Amino acid sequence: MIKQKLRLGDILVEKGIITEENLMHALKLQKESNFTKKLGEILIQEGYTTQKEIAKELSAQLKIKFIDIYAHELNFKLINRYPSNILKNAEAIPIKEGEEYIHVATSNPLAYDALEALENVNLSKPIKLYLALDEDIRQIFQRIHIIQSTASIAQEVKREISDDTYKSSNQEESAVMRLINLILKDAVHRNASDVHVEPDARNVSVRCRIDGILEEIFVFDLDIYNAIASRIKILGNLDISEKRKAQDGRFSMKIGKGVYDFRLSTTPTYFGESIVMRILDQQKILLKLGDLGLENKNLEVFEDIITSPYGIILITGPTGSGKTTTLYAALNEIKSIKNKVMTVEDPIEYQLPLVQQVQVNEKVGFTFFSALKSFLRQDPDVIMVGEIRDMETLNAAAQASLTGHLVFSTLHTNDAPSAISRMVQMGLEPYLIADSLLAIVAQRLVRKNCVHCREKYHPHPKVLEKIPVKFSKKAVFYKGVGCNKCNMTGYKGRVMIVEILKINSEISQMISQNKNKFEIAKVAEKSGFFTPMVMDGVSKALKGLIPLEEVMRVTK
Image (cartoon, rainbow, N blue to C red; front, side, top):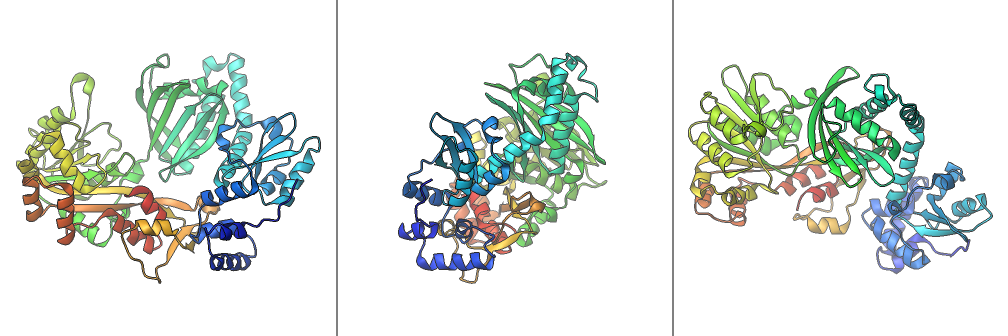
């Protein structure tokens, strides 16, 4: 192997990505850590550069081709020829064996001694290096570990199928059922919100959404996919012979000391059915408003509006932003034996005490609109409509609010002021919106720093440029670096960031005059009735709850 006398810091200084002062500071921090951290890791942590910038410069300087390692199938016969400790020291994955070379992807091409040790394992052929992102290499090592650790139970499932015992796989003791139990128990243990079972051309990937981000947990050979898919569909009372249409179902399972509900959805894809199981934990929904992440002024405003006698309160945000949790927390706060609360949902995710909950059934024509019409004859005080999807439902909700009911519902918009434009687009007259609308809450969920491993860091200058705030030089930010408590992610749990647009007489007049969302937002902000969501995120970042990058990930 040809060793070039190049050092990462010198390359980055030469290209103007970092300054000499930045490099000296990073080297000092590396020395203080007893060299347990790599220089590139510290430069990224201090906000001087990014992983992609480092990879780009190394690729150009060393004339090593940059590749997407996920585009290559894992060659376990080749990987198993190398001791795992040597591969990890070199931060390298062998990807294929050619006639002249063994092709190896690495995230650290300057680790000459480690790479030389890797080359010495197989002296018959030299290695040819390719550059890959550090994060991707770590994820591939994780995938290899997952496949190896689940190999025994996967083999047992294969034997069960080949021995023709799969016919009895509806029994609890079958290998397929034990595998499904393992997947679901692991997901619950990780506090996942969803489990995704996804076939591709070569494997079945099982991913869990943890704190809003998908993580691969299991990988199996394609041979056992049909057995897993059929058994899950049986659990959810779905038609196992129907693979051309989307299906929805539900099942419950005891895991540990708790009983969990799983909402099941299947969708046909090119390689087979994609299966998603939403995990519903009854204990998680009985939250108080303070537990959601609403703080200070926002909490005061929200507590004030939900005790109003009538009007529409809209919760907006994309799928997975916690709208349902906020609605249930609000209903949980105001429900009592003295008032009647009714909800119409599709589907009912959680059961709330003292609340009459109704499930939409479009097959028999029982829609949000027809349910809402029937509610008005039930003499409710509070109505919750799971989602406003059409003009009929929106108009009925407005009429309900004008006749003395407090109405909660959701819309899919990116921010609070946009909900007004959306209602106009759906066909509701501006004067009706002005008369009926009480407040709009836009929200997102962001990942919290792990309290066990968070450290001070400096956000990248490009991140700071995008934030509409001038930070003082004393501003301190924190970011999780990864530990056993957070599965090396640096994040543990999520918190909500919000913006609340409370409708006062001035804004109500602007709505009736059909002013656009920018004019409304400007006036609301000046009057103190509205603070943009990004500012709530910045406030939480300055408290050390979240890194600043999380604010930029979910806000504009």
